[in-house]
Length: 233
Image (cartoon, rainbow, N blue to C red; front, top):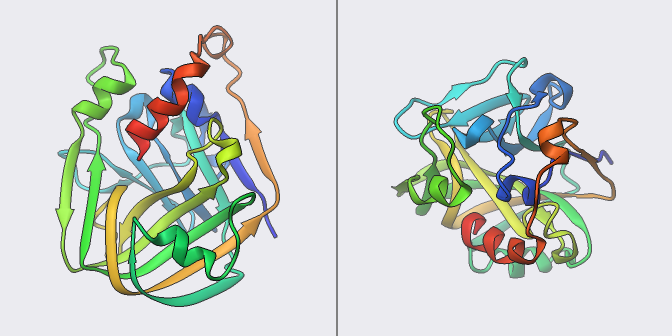
């Protein structure tokens, strides 16, 4: 059972630490599975079988080189412990569906949901133009895409509420279609028939940025919970 490895935290990202500081090569094996974002939140990253796909508004989906430095990533090697056929799964009932097979309240899980999605809403940020911007400004300008009848998989994690300032609490999913042409951060989804796969992860390793900018970062901890829910959910 492998661990989850994470560079930085969702709290630091929400507080505005967007600078790319760690190379993908430090975290992504040839089997890597996970998600993240690129420097200055210029793209949503979806990691599948070691390939890092960057989804940016106005650009074709593309893979990043292993030398690319990123501000946030959450990855693991994914070997499902269970693969369950499910019906009528949505963003609203996914926790209840998962809870039929495992109680997730206090554990970390790597999770994938594969199938043909009758309804899917994704979002992608625009590439940073070199000027500074806040996380709220990034969120307000993101492109929202709606898809129907699209085959692919959700890739992500379940994080217990207790760790909700380290990683997004509950489900955090990105999507990759079966042709590797469409990707993004998942806002809503539904599938009549799908396969729910998951693996419990008993260890999460956090690697903090080592820069002076990170050490000097001021984080309003009291505001984080509302911000994470508003922007990531």
